[in-house]
Length: 116
Image (cartoon, rainbow, N blue to C red; front, side, top):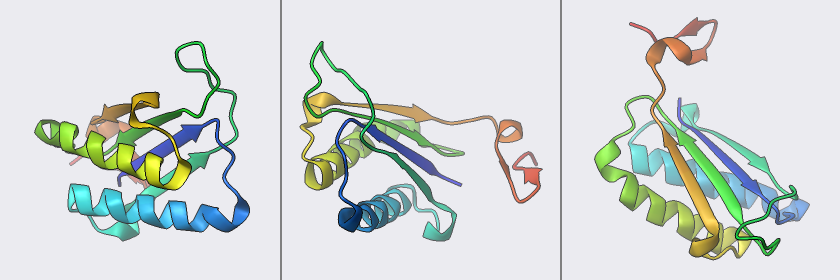
């Protein structure tokens, strides 16, 4: 059930969207060790976004996943910054990443929540 949201002021050309989405999906699956068939990636490109008072290319990501291993977020940050740099040309020092481990009863899928 991992969800990676990518919000950026960079406009992604239509022919490059699938490549970015596929790379993001496989990266999240590999990082978390979860089946890619459950990974969702949401891209919001061409957004109005300023970082440090500048509208230069910037990115805000949120990685949400049940059981997110908090001791690995530093490595995840590095990999996600590499993704933004490689596919969007956004420098790592212009990327913020929020990591979220939601309560199971507040995350739903297939008409139910993940509460046990």
